[in-house]
Image (cartoon, rainbow, N blue to C red):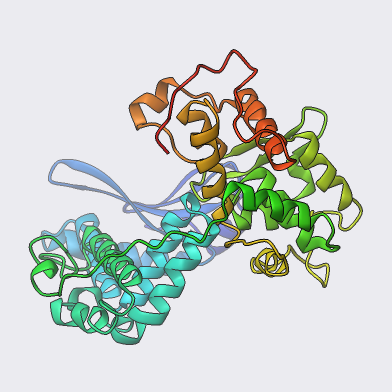
Length: 408
């Protein structure tokens, strides 16, 4: 006979288990939540099956559910196994309704915390531009080789770098879908032994960024000093710091420790997604002091004062110069050429100044130095050269071991 009443279930708040009879139990936890359980034996084992939470499931509904479970037991079916099977079937139905675009969104959301903001944007843009119009609404299980070729063939020779990235991204999304049991069989976007037999060979050409010579960089810096404006100051800093365009344009005041003369750029603003410390030299400080008070957050605010300087602003400032010049990124190559040919600075210190990875995973595990003080000496040499110093210099810091003709 049933023991509980609707009023008791509503008013009771003391933690504990309250039986209604024939296996139906109301469990009240210390935090006040109330849950219905059905306790039964099957095959010599005891099971507690959750029916639902009160008040979403009332006393009457809980009794009806318990009656249904007793009927299943009488027919030789374990209610818990039956409920699990129903859940699996429901999940399978839901998976069958997921489109490639949905699965791609899930993949991006899962992995984006380890990516830079720029890398995530590249993923989203390339899929939206080239993939979703063709297979976005298809189920991952239905995507086959012909569909992948329909995406790739129009762009394979026209924009080869983007096409290779698109192929890889389709492959990764479909691999993830297979891991989630949304498709079976081989990946139709696989390259080796599959698409490499179906697509023509791309002609890969490497076009370096236009770069000024060290002498031309010196002339550029001299001319920039006579030009007013935020963009000109950012252009000066990009030559002095040899950082990437976005790293300079997006500089923020909280990143600067002027007491210790260190500019710390967080990983989300770096191409390699790793924190990079930049030694602040006297010459850099002169440029930075010229933009103090322009904005509370950004060193180089845009014209509206609501964000950082746009990425093309430095290039526009450099285009005003009489001295020959390349693109902003080219000054990194200029610096690297100068460091290799005109100094005895070790290769790893030069590479670290450019925020490049300088070691394999095993070596990096043991050598975790970023050579900050050695890089400070190197940047002082660079600035001395840009100011009209000698064309060939040696390091005064004896702590930096000499290296003859380091390879760039």
